[in-house]
Length: 129
Image 1 (cartoon, helix red, strand yellow):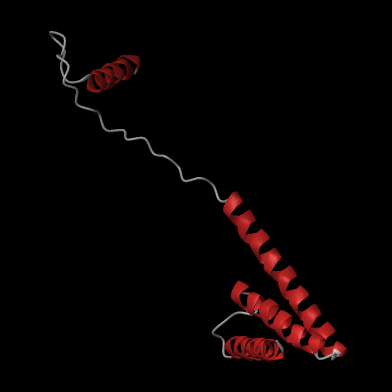
Image 2 (cartoon, helix red, strand yellow; image 1 turned 135 degrees about the vertical axis):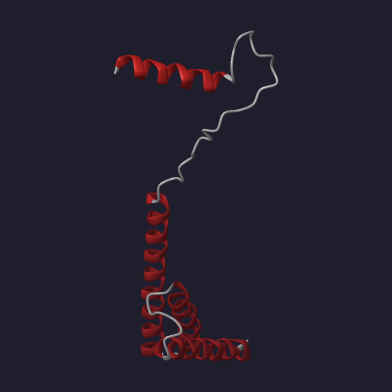
């Protein structure tokens, strides 16, 4: 059991250092979710090995480190949720093109129903002017 806890502590240490390296070189942003998640996981793993070993200052520090990362992750998720909720739904644009129908036209009708209405409207506009 002690070997497993030690291995997990080393995984936490490597994860913490890798995340720090990625932020320091500009590959990750300190405000990114993956960096904060790496902080949570590494804090829990290193805090666990410190607590098992009775090194309480390190255990408490790592626990606080993990809690801060968790709070930041939750804030990032809330912000992402608010942005997606505030984003307007995509507008549905109706197709304004006239549809061809297979129904027989009444005798004397020219064009489909849409073109007849447009022609009637134009004639009305001309009469009104």
